Image (cartoon, rainbow, N blue to C red; front, side, top):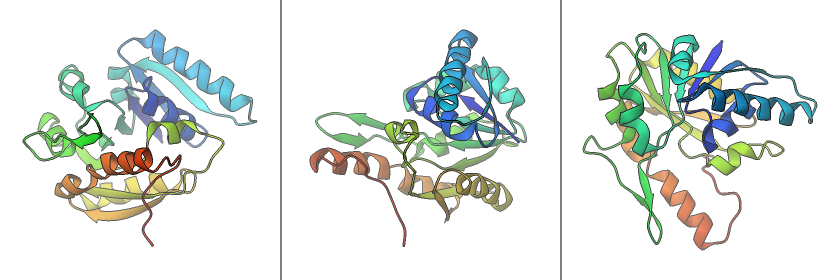
Length: 216
């Protein structure tokens, strides 16, 4: 299975690259292929120093879409529309949105689009044949990149196609100590995405290093 990461050179993308590439063939996308290749070199060196092998290729964002069986949109909310407007080929692809529409004011604030969530907005931007799920939203970039530490979090996954959702949940469950939970249809993304600014605010105001969601 090949995982294409659109925006693979950002903080979340780099962390996902290091976490996923020992498990899957990962295709790291960027607006500039040279940046993607540099991220791959960094990830290979980092993993090699820890005795881990990986499979990585640096490409453009379009190539990440074309080559990936599953495509992860590791892009900030403000870049979603301009990025997706320049890409094509999502038909019949599994697409994962970990995107959270939020702003940092004197604290973190959820600022959803008119659709109610980033995932529901992205659904409108993609062709109807794309198989979209919302997942990984509550894992902060710094946690992805702390590769010497386990990710022991619950991951709510929502989407309108049950087969796609279960494939995404299987992917989630292979990463570190993450545990996927079926959260229902894509409309539940309006409840999942606000969890991230909540988690960040709790971490900030309580001076906590590692805050995440767990369902017991």
